[in-house]
Image 1 (cartoon, rainbow, N blue to C red):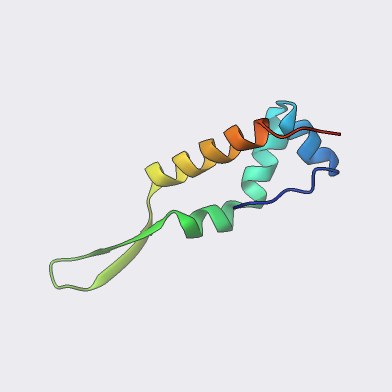
Image 2 (image 1 turned 45 degrees about the horizontal axis):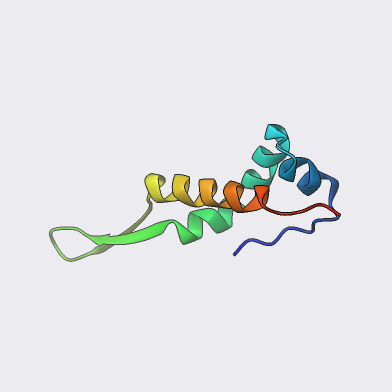
Length: 74
C-alpha cells in the first residue's frame, strides 16, 4: 500500500481532485507501482522474463487514485 502524509499540501490538492497533484504523486511512486506491476513469464526455452504489465500498472494507478479520493483532509 502507498501511504501519503495527509498534512502534505500536494496530497491535500490531490485528494481534492487537482490533476497535477495526482500526476505528481503517481510519478513520485512510479518505481513502487512498477515493482508491484512486474510479472514474470517464461519464453519457449524456459527462461524467465520480467516485464511491467502496462494493463496491471494502469489498474494499480486507478485504484490508488480511487482510494486517495476517499481520504479526508482535516
